[in-house]
Amino acid sequence: MPRFRAILDTMPAYRAGKAVVSADGRSYKLSSNESPYEPLPSVVEAVARAATTMHRYPDPAATALTEALAEHHGVPAEHVALGAGSVTVAQQLFETVSEPGAEVIYAWRSFEAYPLLADLAGATSVRVPLLGETHHLDAMADAITPNTRMIFVCNPNNPTGTVVQAAELEAFLERVPENVLVVLDEAYREYVRDPGVTDGLTVYRERPNVAVLRTFSKAYGLAGLRVGYLIGGEPVAAAVRKTTVPFAVNHLAQAAAIASLAAEDELLERVDAVVAERGRVREALIEQGWEVPATEANFVWLRLGERTLDFAEACAGEGVAVRPFAGEGARVSIGDPEANDTFLAAAAAFRKNA
Ligand SMILES: *Cc1c(COP(=O)(O)O)cnc(C)c1O
Image (cartoon, rainbow, N blue to C red):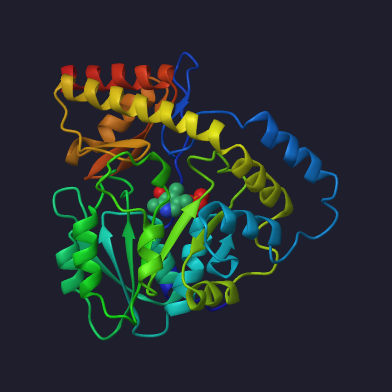
């Protein structure tokens, strides 16, 4: 038998959200924070056009998309680094900082991919428990040692939907040494409505050790095509680019992302609709008697503890797939109104039967 790295035996597996089907054939996937909308016709057309040249390799530097993003955000193109989804960019970040003994700090519970990427890269994970349902930034700053290389702040946090406020973030960043990279994972930035939350793109301009991760998977509805990016200072973006597998971002994905930036107004209207549904779902849950942390993302979080798996099963019985974290809670994406109503009915029935 070939010999593999020992870490492969102990690494957690990434568990993707699954779809479920009820006995009467209903199926609502609220387990992966996807957009409930089908792609825009203009984006599908751009992909169809790009498909006619798919016998050619993609532009390895993704020049057109990089420039479109630079213009969109008002940053130099040298500050942009692309990947096949922002999870891949996160993986590249882990590769840029990891060597034996290197520590990476992140909140827990937070995005499931972080521990996996840390293990794969050979970094040591330092998990700092949430305070309530929110990043405990003071404790995260306390956890910094001379071995700390990188800190992830997931804002809004997946799976709790909570945010860190501008003043808290500023006080935290003041405590982080300049040679430690802080990554603001803003996969859900477009859903944020709380004016007290800083846009990471303003922070990175003032702090060379801060970089921002964004994705086309959520608000832009391109989860199936895999495009994400980092915006950071020149040295950070350049380091990430060095770890890219050649041609990582495929030709269709590049075309779809460019078309999505061009159709941003239409896409952001959809985000507004999801945000409105988020408010409706959260209020209805609170009315049912649930405690639901304020959420700035496209999902809600229910801390169910030992009842988590039972709850997920009850929802599955109604055709609603949620994302359970056994013993902790369930994350439920905001879908279209019909999906949300079905979920709300399942949640109400669960409370009655509990
Ligand atoms: C969904 C998500 C991502 C983005 O994943 P992609 O690889 O871009 O699809 C990144 N970070 C967090 C916290 C997420 O929830």
